[in-house]
Image (cartoon, rainbow, N blue to C red; front, side):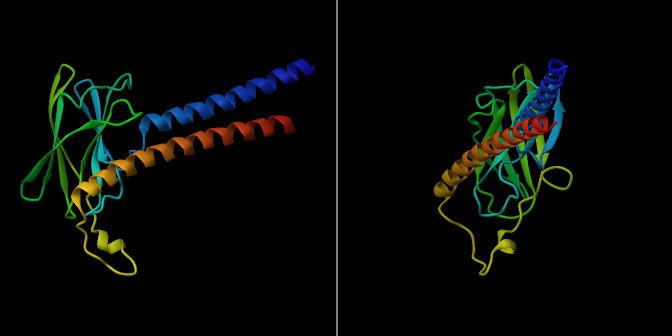
Length: 206
């Protein structure tokens, strides 16, 4: 009888642990893509938005470009060498942005820049994803990914104009993105640990 009860407890604990791990893996796979647009292009799923949200004018940011095989969720790597990105604003002002692979995130790429005005931005991607040619435009806005907001609305107690050194802000954007990803991993790890500890306590009380 004791062996049967112990076996049931172990099975329940295993179930709790599996659920926790599945949740963690799901969170890691999806990243922090909260206000992003998803699109199927051929056999690939493209997810695009800003790395830092909300996006504010005058603040370091980056294109967040993620690609997986749509039916297997397998990350597609090496696209920093085969895909070109361009940022477009307003009446057609554009700037090429170099994509770089994001550390520890297979299939995820960032193109760093500083949006200097609030409003709608277009991210334009051309080139090849493996054997598939692409020419896709992603436009910010409702139901897609967020427009850039005016940072002065959030400043307190004084409103100050933006416009710091560009090179320094791009470096700051890269550091901020790296720190945010590290914190997300730590948070997920602590969450999983908490679920497992809670499950152990529940089993002991039973």
